[in-house]
Image 1 (tube, each protein chain N blue to C red):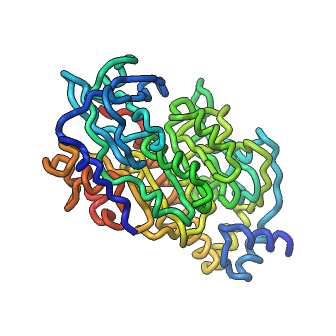
Image 2: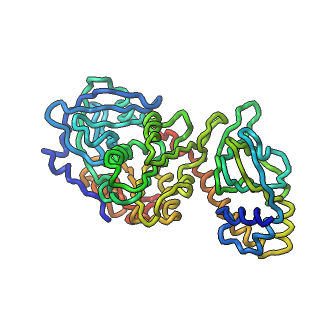
Image 3: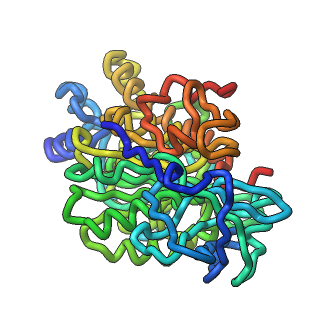
Length: 285
Length: 153
């Protein structure tokens, strides 16, 4: 099974030239995390696939790669959820409605949402890793009949730092998907699960022979999740991870995001676990 | 006794357990029911019994003086509560609290330790089942200590 490769970059006039976008609606998700809608100042918003990313350029500050976190069928704008962790991301979280921002993309290989049709789908997210998975969840919910069981497992630091909490509660209303949420630590008034998200995998119900697993979160969390999925019987070629490295050119030319024999920006960010398992735990890579 | 033995064999922890060993363990077992808020055990108490959850959820808590209890794990059906019964001084180092109605099988620790000492095949079988539980929980704790969702600059 090969993930859908997308050549959206090739359709851009020049993938190195940022297009001007304007910040629309803003939503503060957490104290340090903001979701922005970005609409092109001219022309149409390019199509994207769940799992792809854009390069966001704050003028005078710098450029970073940020996964798309909105609905791929909404053609008016891109949606990005950004956490303040550095100079550029901090500047993005401080933008106001109407501000301009440079944008290149979308780039990269997305989640195999079409290849997963007919299979059970297990989505494992940790922390901000729910953002790159959200477009896949929208797609699966919009095309629910095409999938088998759908299981969403989400891990968060504590009950207060839970990304998209309202949406998780909404998704829970669906009778035909299973959602389990866990937090690393909680006080006694939290009645949900406590523990790490890989621990939810053995408790989940899915057909191990016919499951596609999509995993996104901090790399160490993905390592433990991939192990738990493999232990549960999901073959490594049916486990997909969204990798993160320092992306610069975003089209596989500069080498900043080299990951063993691959480039995360061009061959990823979504990668088949079977393809990277041998180098995944090598810290020098 | 046959009823408890049958229930034990249904529990994932005892999957494929040899019938003769199942009968030995059942001899140390009894049924429990805990209402929400009840403690299965508390820190400092003798670790004289461990539990196999059949139904409901149990929160494992640590209490620091002057602070609210911190829940660091929740366990559900098919899981085991309690490891301190295996190693001296056989005292609980955490609290285990039912967060909803819990039905569980309790295994008398001294009784099972005695049977494991007398029958090393049973003891080895028990260790083979407990060790993966310990390792999974150790890995989970490592991941929690890493605080992977915390901010890194």
